[in-house]
Image (cartoon, rainbow, N blue to C red):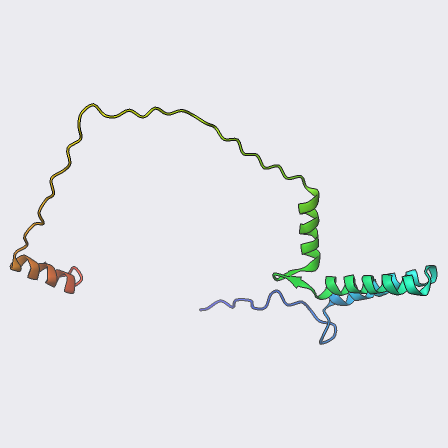
Length: 135
């Protein structure tokens, strides 16, 4: 019996065919921030801030870098920049004396390859052909 393996486990539920729940709430939050700023700012600064806020909301909702959501990448970047990095390298110099051996080293004599008889060669061939079953 085969077990059923779940597929598409990273697919999120969708509200509309185009938006997931997360994307919808990111865009709603960006729109709400823009609406809250409207009475406090004049038209031009409000438009600039609205463009930035909506762009940030769209980035949080839709942008993925290397398959990771923008919010995760922003967290990783903040953690990287605010945590101190300390890389230390200390080279330890030690003196080693090299001494030459007192006795001269003799080179090994080259051995001639062993001669194999034709009968032994046929026996090895049968053994390899039969994958080890031949005796």
